[in-house]
Image 1 (cartoon, helix red, strand yellow):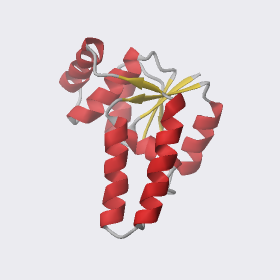
Image 2 (cartoon, rainbow, N blue to C red):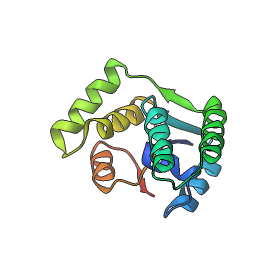
Image 3 (cartoon, rainbow, N blue to C red):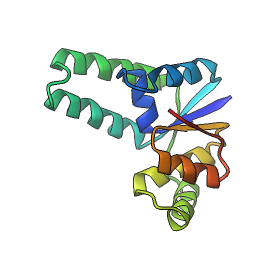
Image 4 (spheres, rainbow, N blue to C red):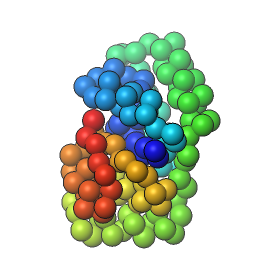
Length: 137
């Protein structure tokens, strides 16, 4: 089963918060994990924010980053292709979304994901309208 996680969901593998157990369970069930190419910069941005806000130390930041970079070696990462852009534009035209959220939806559609996981309720609604099976984490 191809499981696509947007950044808000995938970060829950590393930072314990509401929905982390659900995300970990889906990651264990997946035969392939899928991400958009924008997920890595977004997740690193979240780690940097946590460090700036003194919620994690610089050592914890380096550890989280190393775990992320090791994990993504085996992940299908979708580039920004014309197909992704087309799906993203359709999602934007039919929903109230931020651009990056639409790119995650377009990437999941381009990768033929079986499940789309996000923590963003609006994004989940848009993904479902686009034909994706959704899980809100």
